[in-house]
Length: 156
Length: 205
Image 1 (cartoon, rainbow over the protein chains, first blue to last red):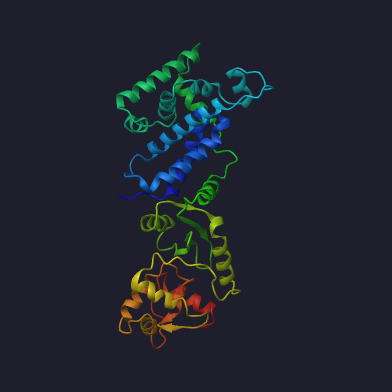
Image 2: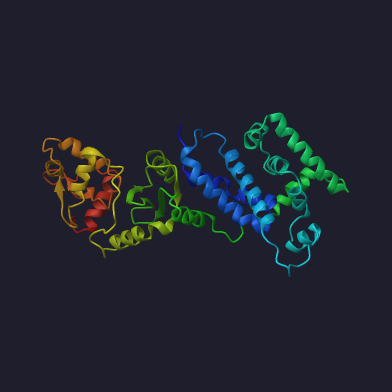
């Protein structure tokens, strides 16, 4: 089994992976999510047993990093003089970022990943199943449920 | 609202920033190096002999390849297979090599001070190449002589093969090894390159 040079992965997936990080971790955490994903991937790379599904493997790492960052942020102490909570819509407007990603980030992690990878990247279900470590049926359900919720929000 | 959510998602994704303000390659490569995760760093260095792939491990320079016969991608894939798949383009890691090569090609440098990683030159090949590395700028030797110095005076043909398999031409100066009698002999990068290098060193007029 021959693993391709890591540079090949970096060239092939950087752009999509960065967009995934912005969409699922938020623009404030995207740089960290992106860098931590690549470093974790590089650390684990030589131990990989299979060279197929490298994209799924990479996006699974990114999904987990986004979850970790989200948790870490949740645990961070909030200073007393912190500005009052702003609404998701306001935050989105302020960052010039589509409100749609704010809604995507409200989805459970697997649905979030499924929606992005399917709708934006057009990822095949067998690959998505590998990414989510689930059956293809479960992958389909995650896409379906996620899109359904977004559609409800979007048309509301 | 008629626009479907999937189309909306695709359009919104188009508007997402590409790794904005991040120089992705060098950024990841430098972090990887700092954490000891960069097993092989490479860069493309321009030279009068065409673009060169120059690669180093933390131990030293491990590969220098002409890119005419074998493309850059093939050289890098070969290094991934032989050394480690943790290989990244990291030009800053090869600043010293680039500088010394530029100086050499401009005629301002007669010897390289770069540490060498001999991983790709094992056994007799390694021995022949280590002996070759001692031949100075402007000097030449013969296949018979390097075979002799490598401890196998009768392995002249094997010495020729070893030189042909030199993973670090130019820096390990296999171009300075000629046939007994003065004929140029072969060269991995083509005999024109051998002539160029010998001319640069004042051996050929």
